[in-house]
Image (cartoon, rainbow, N blue to C red; front, top):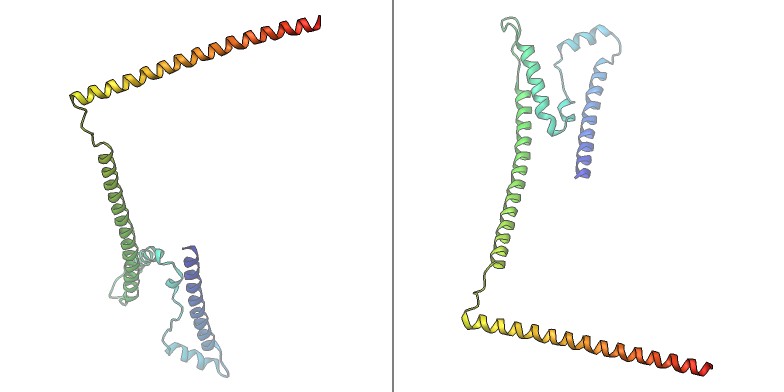
Length: 197
């Protein structure tokens, strides 16, 4: 996105540079003279003004609306005079600029609206998926009925009793091994003492 913006600004700058050079060149050609300078001055008075450089092209499309508001206010200030004394002004340039700014603004708003619509749709889909997950997770299995519950309880109690019996047996075996180890240690100590004597 940054690269696209940079290339757009570069293109805009090149166009403005070219049109500015053309306008400066025309103005210089008009000022150049050979011979009688008064003839050149008379011909300059009869010529119409030509524009090549468009200052509004130097502004980013996002800033066109602000620029248009500034120019509009300035034009109101300029034309707020007695119409019998001052000629009327052509506001066609301002209307074109207004259309351009509004068109760009509408395009940006449409893009933002489309993006928000996609985000809303994604959120709706995620919510729907979440509801399905939750409903699947909490679907209750039917509780055990009468005899089935009693059998399950009996089975669990039997398993607990078996585990307790195994634990008691393991503890008893461990104690027997410890007693045997103690007896063997005592016999070894006695043999070692007898050997040294």
